[in-house]
Length: 540
Image 1 (tube, rainbow, N blue to C red):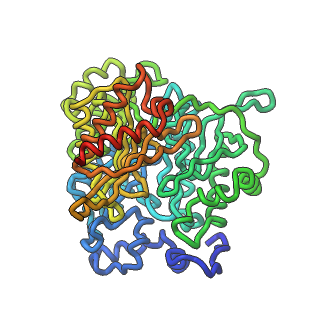
Image 2: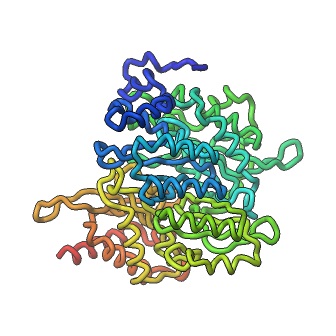
Image 3: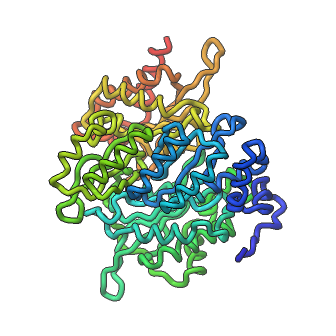
């Protein structure tokens, strides 16, 4: 290693840290060929967690030997060959399951260790990788899915994301971080990559330097969700595009060397930032980078949460991009093949994934837009004009595959959204996010209505799947996490409780008033009172 592990003599290191001192996570790549030849039983249980560095999680139940694989897609950008390769892997090895994640990555399921070497070869051939998609390492870098074509971006961040991703990729100087580490680099004025919930986020800004207005970034640090969520804090720094990599290296080095390694649940960067404060953290960054200007003017104008639907003009004259909904992010391999062919027929074969679990087809000549929208693949569930609740529903993986989940989520959220679309219409969208456990891969804290899975005991002493309600989340103006309502709702009753709560919203809202504005106007007490009444009636 090119650096000293200044934490190695800490007597209070947790078991995972001790294991990482013996074997770096990226070293697992050297073992996979042998594991594949000898079969699942040859993988030591001590190495199961290290497989995360190769983008592999054992899916539920672990003993069956099937893997979830996550593939990094920096800033969500995929070319035609990459899309076809991913679809082929899903069809050949993953039972046709193709998931888009809330960090613009792609997930497969049902893989066996014997298949992994061939999958790696296929990915490498088209410039894709799983390295760092999971594990205590820099994860997939999220960004503006419209980078380079966005009329509303301050600057094109695609080359910056590529530069930073290439630097950290397979870099053993940064493959042993205290915990997972999530980065966002975004030039969109609409905060399409959810800056405030990332460990480090570069956001668009301007500053007059030597009489000339410069375009660059502000930087926020210490965001993250899970059971103890934190919003990222902004440092008093202005960063030019060519300085982003150096600042990213500095912040990552601080996390590597000073992040907490005693207790896993306190090892994220957010806890270090909370303890140090933004000013101390900034001064530490400057020790690595040298002098940097103070903050300029924030260029962020709003928050679209990565939901981009319909036809929009690109900054390139005569071209449009089209945003499509994928219900809760799940496609089949055959659908992906068809989407790839459509993107090649009408555009340049490119697909952009969004952190809302959806996708965009860019670079479509205006005169071809209508014909593209008439393609058979877009006449069913995949739509540029999705129904309102389906359009803004997000879900994690749930008990179908995840060992941590307490409840089923993916299919349930899809069905609940479809039920609401049949039963109710509103003049504003309502973002509903469902998660199966406190880790919040479905990002319920930033939703209008967050649904968190729990287990509850019924009157007849049976344990059943249920959900807690959280209301009023946003990342507008720095962000606010949603607030918990008291009470648990059995899974089978969830659609009806949601319907009644949303009817109350509809009947009491002002014209054009969003759910967030309504919640801030009426307060949590009135929503709690309404939920109490609904539960009393439905449980009678």
